[in-house]
Length: 178
Image 1: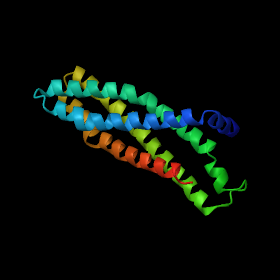
Image 2: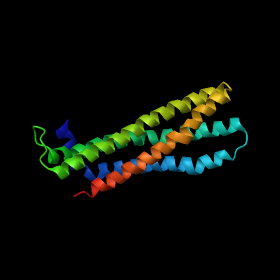
Image 3: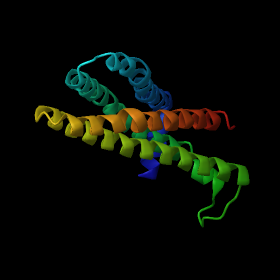
């Protein structure tokens, strides 16, 4: 598998990097647009049910758009991490550190991958909560719908925005490390 990823990256380097960057831009940018533009517009709706229906619908559209990009981002991240040879530059076959600077970059790659994985889990939970809110709205359970949606808008989306910006910054650091 390692040889396949190394060859894949060698053959499609620019495409893989482009897909990785555009996926991050769409995922993080979509959340920023939802949180700071759409959320503010929805807040102006006075009818609570209509407000929550608009929010649930908007989140469904966002999640439909960003989920494939989240998957692409993870796949390209793994491909780049292996294809760029971070481990090979940092450690020998026995697992001994051969270069401290390369090892710090290798560890940074793992931090970035961990951030994207936490964001992916958070995205999955947001999708679940949105679906639960939709069911609650269908049953006229506005209290439950509000609880499901509020957690997404107040905490979960902002968390993913912050983590996404950090991951993008780490990507820039890694890209310019050599």
